[in-house]
Image (cartoon, rainbow, N blue to C red):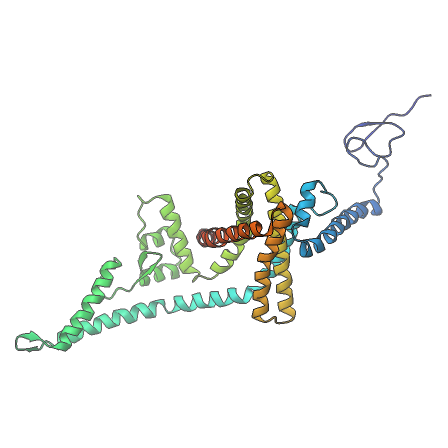
Length: 362
């Protein structure tokens, strides 16, 4: 009796009549497309992830270090994968964070607009003061016993101070020319305003702030960003800063794991420390998200917010104790060292770098 040879429609693997699923790729042999097939796998996969998420959510909050230890021990399908958990928690957190910081972004943008709107008025006032001092000196050329009067001496000192300030800032401009400065770049505000109003080319604007053909490409790029910053009146800079924070986490988490590797150099591979770091930062994001949502519904007193933030330190102590199986005293000391290095050195340096990157991406 001849048997009909069948092949998997997905991977072309040769099947027998006894195969209901392909042993090579796992696809169902008789998988005719229907509405049920179209939505069944998608819904089942979604709720499968959901089930693992809810199975992992409570232990992450109330059993510090438990999920990381279970995952390292080999239970990798029972709970949500640490990187997947972190990704979910970070998406939720940054979504809520973007909503909660909108008012701060608007206030920052309005403040920058006001600062730039006062720029020319402040510079003109400074020029007016210098002109007034010069005129006063011309009008009051009087001497007492061959020496200048006290009033003239004071006026001369004020004028010399203004001239010295201009010299230090490199503002050796013509009389009645209003000059400004951004990030160390001096420019003629009237000329730059006229170029912006006339839709001048970028090259013309660059020359207005001192760009030369011999300058490097990096210098040209920085000056372009300065012009863009001034043209936009600084609007959007804070948003650019907030947008770079998620990117920074790709560096902050490995640094955190590296510090753990130094403190626990004989306990596990670097991947083990990464597992712990993913779960810990997932907890931080979820806990902060819960605080943000709660504050949106009910205004929590600042004292309670501060206690919740401090509690994350003790959460870290318990997590490290459970994951690395060391005594509480030794774990507490290592937690203090880890927190000190991370908060005093890593986070501030990252903060400065984020502002620099935000300016370059602005």
